[in-house]
Length: 129
Image (cartoon, rainbow, N blue to C red):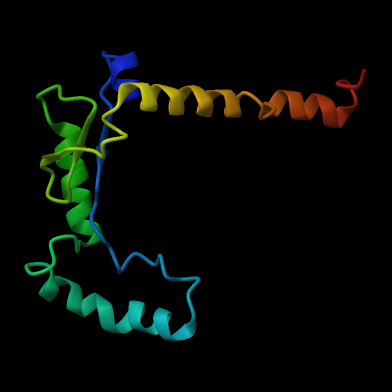
C-alpha cells in the first residue's frame, strides 16, 4: 500500500492465494507429514475445496493471480482473497504511518547490504583503506 501511494503510475496489489497443501511446502517436514502431503492430501483437496474456503490448488491460485494482473480497472494498493475478490488488509496494513515506517526501515536495512560491485572490490583488495 505504501508503494501504491508512493508510485501511483505503477500498480501494487497483494493476493492471498489460499492454502496450497500440494505445493511441496512440507518437504522439510518429518517422513509421515511428507507422505501425507504427497499421497493422501492431494486427492482430497479438490473434494474439500467447496467446504474449506481457504484451500486452493496451484492452478486455482494461478487463475486468481492472472485475473488480478490483467484487471483493467487500475486498482492499486489492494488486497485480494483466494477468489480474486478485494478484501481489507489488517488494521496495521491500512495504517499509512505504519506501512511508511516499514518501507523506510526496510530500505535502511537494505542499504547496509554491500552491492555486488563493493563486494568484488573488497575481495580484490581495492576496497582496503
